[in-house]
Image 1 (cartoon, one colour):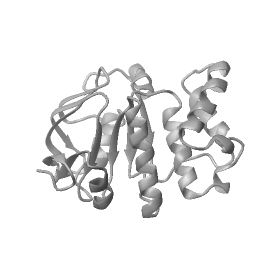
Image 2: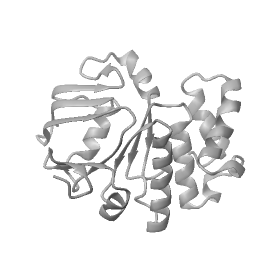
Image 3: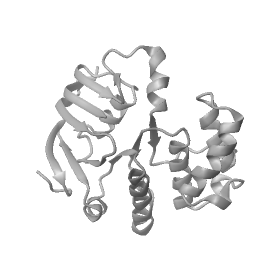
Length: 225
């Protein structure tokens, strides 16, 4: 579960980014977080992953209190969260298999677990025959699928996707979102940050609208109030 209660975030440069955000995302939900540039979407992602700390308020993610979390607990928090980025962030000199293996080694997974888990995840994202390919030999859509596989490989309870279709054409964007929808159907909580109104409305999921550091809407569809 993700829970923010009256969360304020001020930066040292004087920017007041979040002005009292309260929201709850239940386990197993699929939620879009939308809003104009500068509304605070990226700040919320950084707060949820423990990259930054709120100025005030309360934040709980998957059983961790992020206002009191110790440094040694941050890696434990991040094992429960898989993050997907717009720019993929794959290691170009490593194969698809090696990119996923690297992510599993980082959390101390055994070789036996790695050998069993990676083929399953690649099949899940439709890349069974691509384990030995390098990222630059793949299409943009395939690279994003590798990024999704990497986010899934440590079996997180939550996926956070930051503009996951920002570099893809509309057809591929819908394909990637459909994949995230299928992953959600398996029980994984999915939070997607995006600005693509048509894509959001096509899937008719819960939408949280952020404007000026405040929640201005929460319902089904981009224009929910």
